[in-house]
Length: 546
Image 1 (cartoon, rainbow, N blue to C red):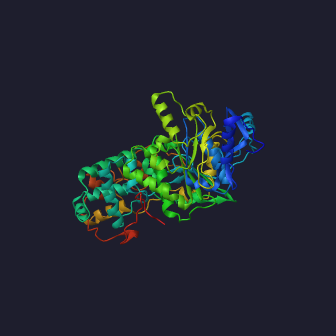
Image 2 (cartoon, rainbow, N blue to C red):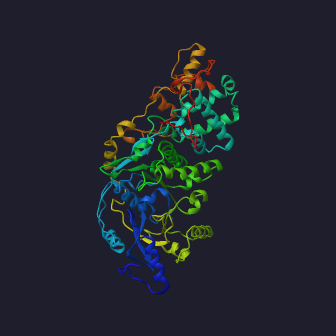
Image 3 (cartoon, helix red, strand yellow):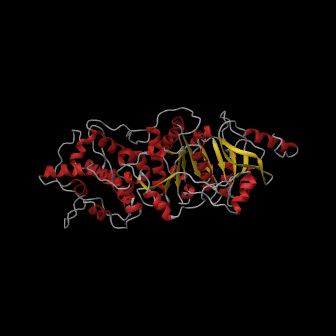
């Protein structure tokens, strides 16, 4: 042990010495805080995590209000300073302050003194995003075809049989060059495939029952009524934007999710799409001296809830393999039991905040958490229930890949603003971004819906028209500056885009609503930009786009 570290007597002194030695790294590392022993911080004993080990993934866990968000902020700002880009899902909308210098105060000064931190206010270069532009941020959208059938089935809460049928729909659309850009494109293809003409098209590869098609269409309608149409479309977000640096500092990409907190299944699955898209676009690089990106996956339990075995296997494989692409993934949740064992076993870096044990279920979760840690001199059941805000039990991977000793830690204070950015400053940052002009305005080009409607009109001898939009929904769409532009039905919004149904028409049948009332010409010939070439799809069914 260093002469500067006070050494407790006897066995305790030996334990502290082992912990200090376990965190004595030679290369670049992030400073988490000071060792906590017998209720007090030992500032000479710094707890750190090697920079090169952050692509070995991690877990930040703890009960609500224990300081998980500040831990993410602390890690993110140090990664940025080391030139490593960061992605953060801002579920509560209170991490935007990372772009501004923090404010000194009594609590910050006291914490810095306790942990031996030389605190200096500073912000990070940041980009602000919002799903579909609902909220404050540059809109992030995905095309339906890129999102793929597996993730979409998860969002729509389809069962295994229905998921397989949806996969068949995507397979057909891919092979025929029918681009699924937004939800009305998918609705059009599903409806066509249960028509007389469509059933004949599927004879060679299987069939789609009317009952299953009905479930899918009803699920899509409910999804649209939640305002989900805004998340699917073009211009599609290029996940390569998350890998940027500015003046040698890693850009922190903040995806605001507070405006869509009532759609947790959607945003957790959308985060998985971002990760899967990165995985399939990035080249293999092996182990680097620093990650290319560190991705924080907040509210991780939502991703795993009610997930099929195949879905969990896809997550497990993606997490296992993305390390070789230079990407580290941190899952953020309340207890380790929220994460399947196959995934948890790949998370080498652990920051466990306090847990509560008020109920028998809480006590069971506490015991399960303790069993996930290496042996240590701590009574972890006692320590984990006694930790204060901003304190955590830590174990990480050392520079040689071995787990470090378990260390109760009083964490450092973030040096950026601990709280939300002023709304006016946030809006100015969004509209002033170089990405705003690229992604702000939604584009509705010709795709599967328009092509099928045009063919239906051609077959019936009518002039091709815009055709009707999706069934009425109540979700708000994005307005100027990323704000919601009001409620209104989905058909009202479609009318504003020149897609509304002709006034005074009688309600047509389901198929006629989508594709017109004529007889379709054969779709055996490939059409569109995917001429004669089926889209190559990944483990998650996402499209390989670049």
